[in-house]
Image (cartoon, rainbow, N blue to C red; front, side, top):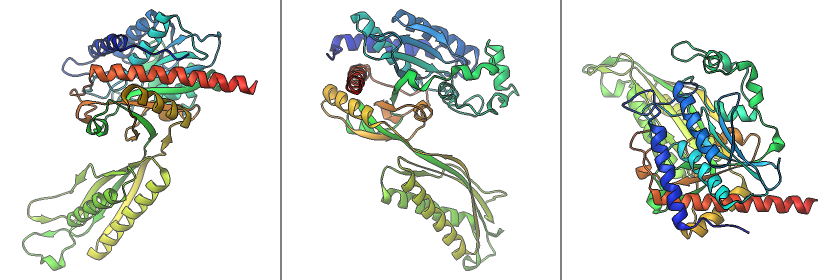
Length: 427
């Protein structure tokens, strides 16, 4: 029978989560902002702290071969497959204190509640604090979660940080061994699914006046370096009808990008984040402009179609103005769909807790991207103030976290029971 975390219990648990987020925020390489990167002394201190909280919640605790901190709460039958909960403990530079950490600490509270109630589920519960999701130190991302799935590229241990220290050297410095990285990989049958609680990092829930939302997919993304080449000229002597102004072409294209993406909808987004005029001056017609393009969406085919339309328009603009256009794609990640069964369990739980549920995609990347390559994934979003993330102003409400704990617990219990029922039917 599903057990509900009562409102007063949820409020006390949420208060502990937020207090622990504050405690982890104090573990930083700098005093004037939160920064905690992979395989740093701060990473290891955070692991020790989180490991102690896991142990107090009734879990067996260990640090794996890539530096993830892990805890296991056994199911009704020892050795049962585990429902994996968690998120990451690393940060960007000058970060907020809830991105990643909220998911790990909330998962510990769920296990703590089960432990206090002396409840065991048909599935074991494992909580993981991934060592690296952001890629801040080495420029490669999802090192922790890809350790669990056994999908580290062979070249990763040799990748250096800004100081020339390689991943392998950094591992050795903290007592890990790059030769043992494969030991972090988990057997496919040992994990049933993965559920990640995370701040939304966007404004949609706040605009809907809702605490919680269910993630349908993690957006795919394409990033390109683009360039218009025209002809530089004197700003005072070249007639307007004879100019080959690269910046004017880029500006026209940027307006088209904004309008077309907005008109198409489908939760796709496009951003020109950088713009550079080499040799630019106030009295020179820009002869060359470099700009970036980042487009994202929850479905790969419509995203590809949008990109094709945007690039075709850039070519048309360049041809009409007597310019050349070139684009080079340097980043490509497919959309990650969340599991239908986990979505359903979350939708039902969120509806029970807050009266109604909304579904939305995630525009940011998460550890669930890596985990989805091997196991079903689901995500629960929690409202964050102003949609602000990756910034010290990142903020959540205690009442929202309390509702998130109640909904996540219901989803965990229901999913575990449904999976046990399917196994019984199969037997």
